[in-house]
Amino acid sequence: MPLSPDELLAFLAELGIAVTVHRHPPVFTVEEAALHTAHLPGGHTKNLFLEDRAGGLWLVSCLDHQPVKVNGLARLLGAPRTSFAAAERLREVLGVEPGSVTPFGLVNDSAHRVRPVWDVKMLALPLLNFHPLVNTMTVAIASADLRRFAAATGHVPIELDLDATLSERRREAPQLAGESARRLRPRARAIARAPAELPARARGLRLRAQRRATAARLAVPQAAGHAHQPAECLSGDPGQAPIDASPPARLH
Image 1 (tube, helix red, strand yellow):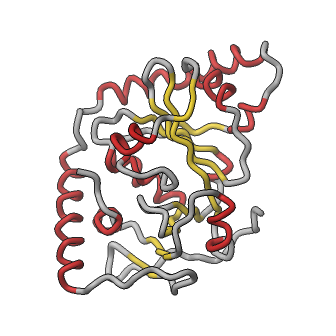
Image 2 (image 1 turned 45 degrees about the vertical axis):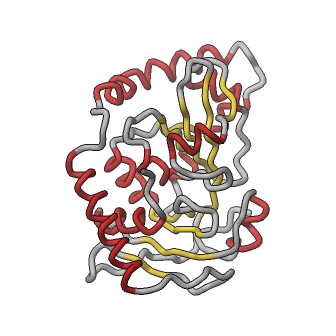
């Protein structure tokens, strides 16, 4: 069964990852999100869930203003023709609804069917914002901790510059795809060797996270989210300070 947002936050806490949570009305597009989150520090993102003709699944994460050509991305990855995955596939694999696509959905992909693709320009920022499985919340997480999260779920992200998908010169594309395929082949083999379920440590963390989230719900009734509600700083270590949320240069 997919994790709830509370269970995801508890999972992050078990990993010792501190995050800041912001609650807001539901948002379904980058433009709607900006109305409620543009004031937040850190890089603002968009996430694309794609499926190729061979059934391969790709979760692309980048800054919200990054242009991406899906056909160019397929050539870059050496994948068959690629398009947006159906909502049913999104629910089945990542456990989220349309409008809530997020790299945090990898926690629900215990079979490692999804290959994350992260833009290097996004990862260059110290702080990033994503939905924590629902589009009524935004979580700020350090980019280094995002990598730790992916590793804990058993996923190996592909890191590349998505500007390379914009090339109009078709003769360049096969070369890019070939180089990318050679570079990614060892990672693909590593993913293929991964167990069908999460590593034992991650499974234990996930179970403890579910118990903690359940206990928290029983102890304190949840308040309804409001736009611009004060942020909640969550940390896996009681003595650990929250993430430094000093804003980098604005990207809008």
